[in-house]
Amino acid sequence: MARNDLEREVMAKLWDAREPLTVRQVHDLLSRDRDLAYTTVMTVLDRLAKKGLVVQQRADRAYRYAPAQTREEMTAGVMLDALSATPDRDAALAYFVGQLPPEALKAAIEKAARNIER
Amino acid sequence: MTALLLGALGLTLSLAVPKLLASARWPDRAPVAGVLLWQALTLTAVLCALGVVLAAPEELVRAAGARHPETVAALLFSLAVAATIVTRLVVSLVKVTSRARARRDRHRMLVDLLDRVERHEGLGGGEVRVLEAPLPLAYCVPGRNPRVVLSGGVLDVLDREQIDAVLAHERAHLRHKHELVMESFTAFYQAVPRPLRSKAPLDAVHLLLEMVADDAARRRAGHAPLRAALARLADAVPLAEEVTADPEGESRRRRLARLDRPGRRSTALAVAATAAAAGLLVLPTVIVVVPWLGRALNTWPF
Image (cartoon, rainbow over all chains, first blue to last red; front, side):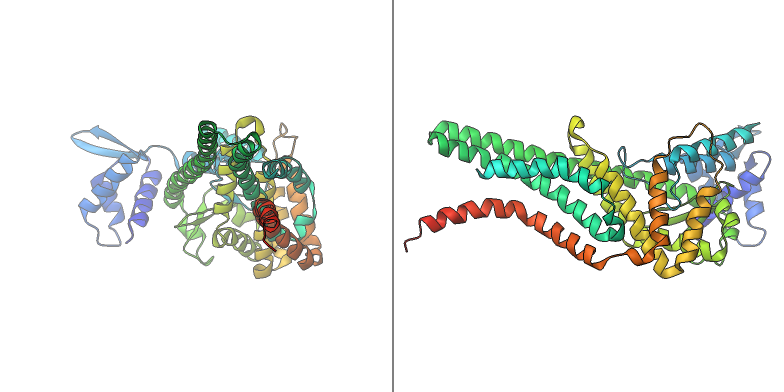
């Protein structure tokens, strides 16, 4: 399985879990329907932690991992990132289809993000 | 004389002509040629600036009578100025492209992680990613490993044909490497000293590239689905009240208008604009070569 797919699935498991998970727990969740080495999961979690996407907590002699942001927060961040690159400051990061004023979209995303926090 | 001519041409091309071209509406009917014309305009203005810098000292020296130390100093100075112009442009281009690449790499990694795979089965193409968000948003992230990103909101408000039209639009951007065009204009914009900068070419080219992608999507997915998708994506966003000034509203209207009247695309305009672009590019050379040719003919022995 491609490395990207595995990273995505690990993140999905962490997001779905209510609490930080150990490597063992993530490994159990992922290896239900396939053969997956424990060390592979450990490497993936380590890599995600290095990228700052996952935070590592030490509890009861075992490391536990939790997403740095909720899926909603990260999604809002990604969309704002795409919208905030205007060609005069930076080459556009992305090309949008239905050209709306970026300010309007940003306002909508930020409003949605505030609603989530409540 | 050559330097004066080049200077006048350069000033016209960097001040007066962009204003005219930015306010013209005919490029909507031949967007590819419009982009070419903008590129030729910008490149010719740079060539003129270089030409002035290099031709002026030689002419001054000739007018004043050649004395050795001054000639060398003037020549060195003009070479330094020309080198500065070229260096500024190159540095700006490197900066803009490397910064864009880094941001896109990180963005791609994040959309890959957030992707809801189960929502885009059957949409085709391994580069499609779906974000879990109600706000309808569709865009592409260009690069060697490009992505087309749709939000869940897009899948909710558009039907299958309209989604295909949106995908075709984004894939046209990626296939035609529109990011390279935008990056070069951004690099030029940032290389120009601040008081002389103008955003007009950036905005105009950006809109023309959208029209090019619209045309490609229209050919591939049909005109009606594309138009419906454009209109619906914009209407589906609840606009905050504080946003009243609507700079993009005008460009959206222009894109929809040209989709309503598909017959108004003009081959003649495209040919004329392309010819104008080619003419512009050779103009500085002609200005330099013609006086030289004149002098050469005067001294011809027959």
